[in-house]
Image (tube, rainbow over all chains, first blue to last red; front, side, top):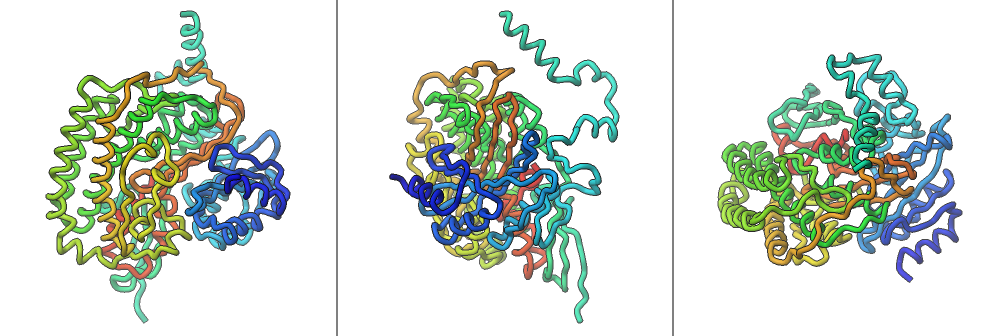
Length: 180
Length: 366
C-alpha cells in the first residue's frame, strides 16, 4: 500500500470527505465540508508534512449554484500532491481566509475576491489586484457576458463583420472536412 | 524624524522584467515599504480559454510567458492528455524534452542579460541576447516561430524534426558551451557583480519552503528540488543530469545555480541527440474541431527556467475547458515574497532582486 493510499484511509477516518479519489498516480483529491477545510489543511501541513503550498484555485459551477475552492499542496519528501476542495454558496459567496497558514494564500485570495467576488473573512488586504476601477460583475464568473461588455465599451473594427463569429466559421470548415 | 519619499519603480523601467510597477516608500536610499502593482498587461487568458475548444486554446496558452513559452504548451498538452487518456508516441516525448531544454537555455540567456544589465554590466546583454538568437533560429526552423512556437500539441508535436536538424542543434550547443567560460570571466567572476550580489536578498531554507519558493531560488538555498527529478514527466527519468544546488540563498547563489544548469541543459540535449528513437511523432486526435473532452480534473507541472509551472485543469464533458488555472512561479515570487524582501533593501538593488527572483508579470495576470 503506497503512502497516498494510506493517507486516503486516514483522511476518510478523520474527516468526512464526499469524494476521495486519485485523478492520477501521485495526486489525492477530496471534497470536504466548509468547516473541515482548515482542519484538513493543517493536518496535511503539520502532521503529514505537506509543507509546500502550490496554489488556490476557484471553479465556478454555475449550474449547481456553487463555487469550488481548490487548495493544492505538495509533500517535498514523499513527492506527492494533495488537493483539498470545498464548495461554497454562489449567491452569498464567503469563506474564511487562511492566509495565516501560508503567507502566499493572501495573493490567491485577493485575486479570487476580485475575479469571482468571494469574500474572504479576516483577509488583511482585500484591495484591487489586477483590475482597475472595475464596477461591473466580477469578470471570471461564468455568467459575465463578455460580448455584452465589449459591445458596451468598445467599437467593432470595420470590415470584420463577416468573421466575428468563430463558431459559425468553424462549423462550416468542419462540415467541409467531414465530407472529404 | 526622517522624511519618507514615495516613488514608483516601473511600469516602464529598463531594469525590470516586464510591465509591472513597484511602489516604494524610501527613507534616504533604503526601502521601508514596497507594494507591487500588476495589471498593466492584463490579457485574461484563463477567461479566453473558457470559451474555446482545446485546439483553439492551445494557440493561446503559449502567450502566457514571453521568455519561455514552451512549458505552457507542454503543460496544457499533458493536462489534456491525462484527462482524455490520449497516448503520446515515444519520439514525441523526446522531441518535447528537446524543445523544453532549448527554451530553458534561451530563457537563461535572456535572464543573464537582464541580471547583468540591472547590475550595470552592459556588455553581457549584448552577448547573451546574441547567442540566444542562435537558439531562436533553431526554433524558427523547427516550428516556424521564433518566440511563440505552438508546437507541442495534445497528442504529440506538430511536425517531425527536419533533415539534419539535430546536427545543427549539436553545432549550436558546441558554440554555446564554448562561450560559457567567457561569460564566467565577464559576468559570474566579475568583482562588481560579486560585490553587489553576495549577501543581497537572502532567503533561508525554511522560509523558502514555507513561502512557496520554487526553481533556482529554492535550489540556491541548498534544497535539491526539481520537478524534473521529483515528479518526472515525459522522459526525464531516462536522462542523466544533476540537480544543481548552491549554499547562500542570495542573488549570487541564484546566479550560479542558473549558470551551472545551463551546462546540465546542454548535457541533456546531447543525450537526446544521441538516443532519440524513430517512430511516429503524433497521435491523431479523433475530432480536432469538435473534440468532446472527458469530464475530469488534473494538476500537471513542469520545471521551467524560473521554477515549478503548474496547470490546474477541470473539464466537464463538453468541448470546452471548464477552468484552467495557471500557477506561475512569478505569482508567488513577484508579489508577496518580493514585497517582503524589498523591505530594508537599497533602491539600486530593486531591479537586481526582481531579476534574480525571476519576476515575470505576464504569469501573474495570465
